[in-house]
Length: 324
Image 1 (cartoon, helix red, strand yellow):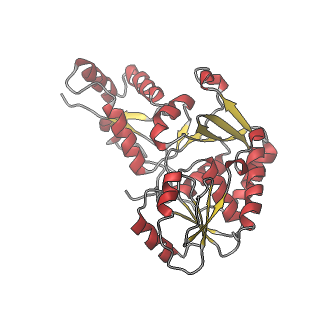
Image 2: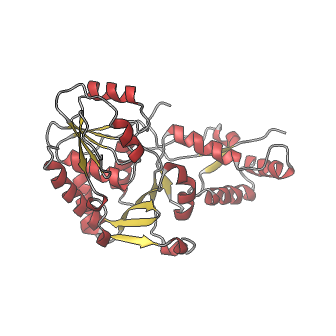
Image 3: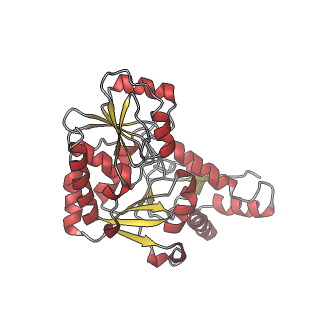
């Protein structure tokens, strides 16, 4: 019998650069629904940011960055997870006139040295402590120090970097954040509704712009996990309605789904393969939705490779614009 692997189907979206409309859209949502959730981020517990808080934080960040020279002509690199903090810093820097340059958070020292030289970076934001440590080993070919913003203190002076502390409270003041204890996670109604989910970082080519565009154009709450490694667990807690993903990440999710099925050759796997291969079988929809829910995926995103190869438009397309 032919075995049909599960496939994860993501919705398509157009490529986008960080739009000059970003601030206007934030102000629009802050006016129309100021107390609605806009951003969710896991940090031990879930933190939820309202549209009103987002507008205030972007304004605060613009002022903090402007005082450090982030203005027209600045070339502002960002490297890290695509979460609430990084998105707001990027939007604020862009609103000040800077060109935003995402850099792979897993780039090694040699790659970083070449990127800094070729892209003429003047400022950077690196929120992850391990990534920051790698950046601080890089020698800057330019004479002027590069202003490097981070929530972590450098601890010592560096010949190529002017490390500037950008504390978390600039992005998420306690008064604007709702803390949800782990004991409440079982009460799904107690959690804010996550409309859009992203669990990747700046290693995704075009991801920053695509995520910001999908979030602001929709006006739905955007959620990110505590770390990329905890993505499956955190996604299950929220059950998002839509996932914004690169094609590379989509393939990894598909591999994870197949790995969680019963082993090929077992009778339970045979039953699953038969039911998923028959699109008219009522069991197919139920089984697909159950597998999706258990993996924190939106409904109707599970199908078989047999179905995916059919002429159904966008059956296996992803929201990504990367060529990988």
